[in-house]
Image (cartoon, rainbow, N blue to C red; front, side, top):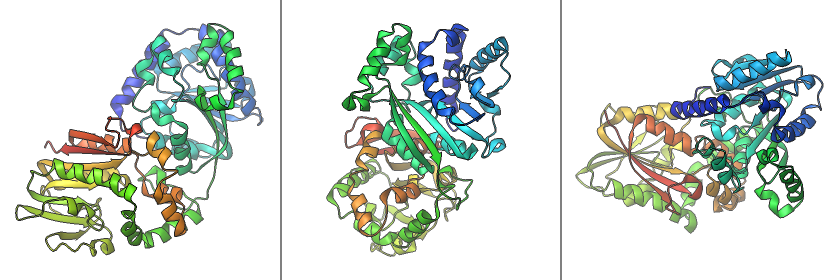
Length: 483
């Protein structure tokens, strides 16, 4: 799996190497926090005899060093060389033979297809930039009857922030992906990667590392965990996941579209056949119209003083045209892959172009401004699409973008109540299934890929205005082509 954000990856690796340098054998023998999680993991994996286990993001292996007697083989994979060295030393000291220690850079998922009985991720999700891609890869190496067990910090638990400060690990954990690990976003993540949630457990309330200070904290956790209202603020969310779905669609260009079951594929095909009708009804709801208009107004304002050739990618029926100035100083091209949608644009000054974003039918350096409003999240091959935009955009040209804040906390929460859910239900479609096919690129994936090609000049978030995608529904950006 190729990771896009190499700088983020390097920062994480260096941080974990520093932590490992200050660890020793006591990390294995005198850690009551690890003991508590070890017991929970052991109760799960003992359901199978001699299982093959993948501990992905193993760190120094504290959770599994004592589980070797319950497993046929454990594959411990991590990015931190120092952590793996510490684990190797401990294995030799204990004469443990059934742990394979592998650096993440050398671990090839393709060598282990349908191989593992259990895969464990303990506090890994918020350290991964391309989490969707990783979950898909892990799904592929899991046996059909295997289980993926995910421990993850609960960002709703406010004890974590002061705790991270106290242990001097604030920056490594409170990164840009920390709040993405909320329970709603993770449920969405697993669902679109064809994983069935077998069980969700709530674990602890206070950080379990406090067990090393006093046993009082352990007793306190057991008491608090029995209180139903406080469970949503538990320290950890634990997901036990299994494979689901039948292979139908194979695609190497986008992990999230690699697999779906037959009924979902048929439903989505029917939806696409009626897509133009659905888009015509989209703006009828005043709430959706208001939110979308915030993005359209942002783009119009940021490019209002610019003239020349404007390319509106994924223009649909040309709704954004209503916000733009179209006169003799501007050449406005509405581009979409759906000819039916383009035919509904009734402005004679607008040039209609049927074309996909992955292969734009325009010459190099021929466009002054590109508008990409709610389109990048739909592009199957995002890298190729942005490469094409970069090709047709003139040096110094602008690209104005609006993205949904999916899978941010607010977006994920309100998705359960969106009018679009009822609108689709009335015409026989499941909102979650349709969105799995439609929003194939997350907010962070789109933003990170944009930063590779263009230089950011401006950003705005709506409706809360605070520049955090977890607190908003949409975000607007203006980038320029530097060369």
